[in-house]
Length: 208
Length: 334
Image (cartoon, rainbow over all chains, first blue to last red; front, side, top):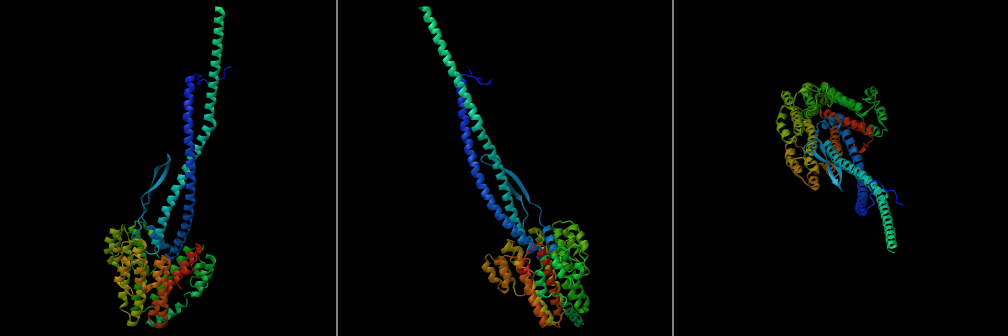
């Protein structure tokens, strides 16, 4: 008794060969995706470590910079500080550009222009201004890294889903269909053999 | 008669907060505690009048009190000393003009510039409002032509070349010290020399900060060499130029041996607030020393004004430190 196959599945040898070829191809893709998943997981782990270290350093620097800003503020007075900060050029321009990491587009920040601190500011304010400019650069590095981690994590999730789908659904389904076709072909072959045997016995009965 | 002025300053000096009080204020737990401790002082009445106790409100009171003390001294001075004292007290006017020109150079709106001006009531003869409203820095400088600061217009080219208002600000200081040192000529010989020493310390430390800008912050040595205040006390111009060119901390420390503590704060600690504290401490110590040796001379009056400035600085520092939970003790001028 022939098993029910899908409408698009033809129980032919040609189709079986085509299907086997396709499964081979899918399995190859599955292996590659598995490799990608492992690589992404490694990259994510390394990036998270880097982020933790950078964030710790940044927090320490922010604390120090705020303390120094507070002292500068206290020393110069609010009006002088306001006057000095008001004179800073407002030309910080950043471009967000795509960069590919293992085929994943991650953003990277390119500073097009930033306020120049050279030859600017009187004593005290210039130290604070410099510290904050360095802090701003570090902040951008951390933002870039966080965004990169987010994208990698997203892609890792997608890749994982694909790997799981291939491993648990697609490949077993194809294998099941192949098995069904093979069984069907075996049945057909047996039927054909018996039919041939019948015909041969009828012919030999007539001769006799 | 200067005697009345000197006696008056002896009286006013009793209003200055002694070191123990400043130390007590530094130990306040919070701003409210700080304000309460100021109750019995000259600041008490206005502090009590504040709707909300915050550092900005207190700062305004301290600035106003300094301006008031300047005015009192000028009012009590005889005509022959009034000119010098007026010139000396123009440092607040210089501060204001400096902020106006900085604002004009960076094209800040007039309202924003006005917010940065110190209280000057009666201490300036220049119509600052008109300068604040000037369309451009060039127009603002035009308005300064009838004042003692007319020469600073020459530094505009430097400002344009290096894209900074620093030359204008420092040339303004230069014009101020020129004016004060000129006015000093009218004083008797002994007072002249003593006050020159005090001004010399101020100028030297200001030049020191300027000279170290290339070493500490990468400013252009060529620019910095043109920004010194050309009155030198213990630091010769050649030494300042060498400092501006210096590349190693060792060289700087060697060249600044006269102001060793200042050099240490700037070069080793890289702490400009501490360096400012050190420079004011040097000035205060000299002023206190002069007050003892010249207790019945005009120098006493200038020393009193210096102590008023130091008190204002300490109080402002304490107010903001307390508001921001910072430890102020190493940064007080004692």
